[in-house]
Structure formats: structure tokens, C-alpha cells
Image (cartoon, rainbow, N blue to C red; front, side, top):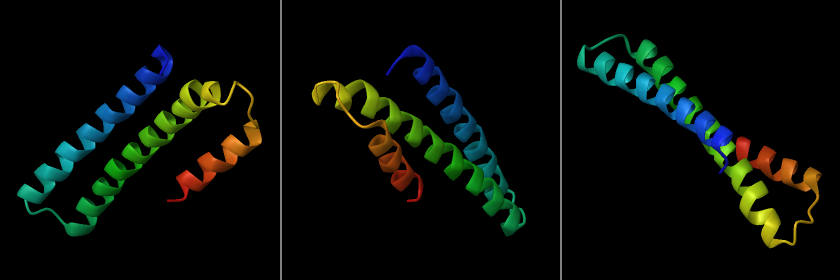
Length: 86
């Protein structure tokens, strides 16, 4: 993972951590359930985006070189799209 990608992932994970802290406080304070669920969705979205960035980096920096550096960029994009839908 290159430095730029690492910085992106760390930024998103810290954002997720902040949202998660908020969710914990909301539950402890017996806040309105739909509000808790909305905040929880933010945690999940931040983690999912982090995963997408990590997978994209892995495909380009680890997998492609093991395939001899030759790959179809469209195939990689398709794989990433399938991952995003999960």
C-alpha cells in the first residue's frame, strides 16, 4: 500500500472510529433508535469504503505484479464493483 492510499484509509478509519464513539454514547444515553441507526450506518459506510480502497490497492500492488504485470483494467473494475455491492 503506498503512502497516499495508507493516508486515505487511516483518515476513513478514524472517521469510522468517531462515528462509532458517537453510536456508543447514543446507546448509553438511550437516544432515539432511528438516530442511532443513522449514525451506525455512517460507521458501516466508512468501513466499507476503507475496505474498497484497501482491495483496490491490493489488486494493483500485489495481485497484478504476481500476474506478470499484465491484466485487464476493466476486469479489475468489474471485480471491485462486485465487492462494492456486498
